[in-house]
Length: 232
Image (cartoon, rainbow, N blue to C red):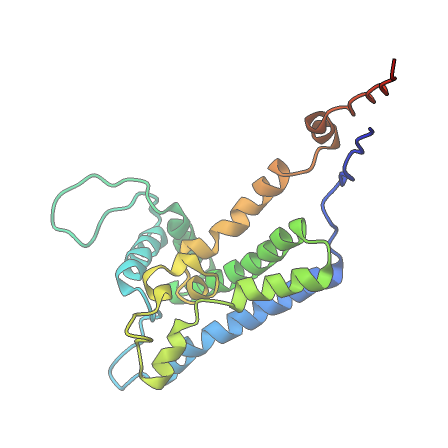
């Protein structure tokens, strides 16, 4: 009996330029869709009031702005501005300090840099998700279906607010409790969870690169054929 070795691929499925362009177009659409609520909030601000630039998760967002403001002042160590207790500054949330330094060097406002960074992270997120999908799926139609499902298939609980109905089946949408579980939800308030996957993608691609030599060793050589038995 002979055992045949499986057909081991030498490299993951390729992605052509049209596919990358499509992933970027989907990312641009995602940026535009998530920007609509911010635009409406800016245009409908009442006289004497100023839209702060955030819609969801204000508790965390204001701490991000606090880090950006301190970065704008030229600092890299964070001092908690929400407490009167004395404490030593520490390096915390360096990404937001970096955005504050970008605002300082470019002359842009904190809110403008915030939303520009949100747009860039969404574009990187969609391309990383498409690359991750293509790594495992060779058929282009199937990978496109999986990609669109991953990007737009969940995290749409905010649509209930259009109907003035924050609950569905007597439950609060899970994307407001755990936005990191989806891709669409963190793209709107710009959490670090939307920029983390693109940062992990290069390491993933390097660690998961198929190795035919190692795979062949794992399969092992084909066992020898058993001798046929003879009757006495």
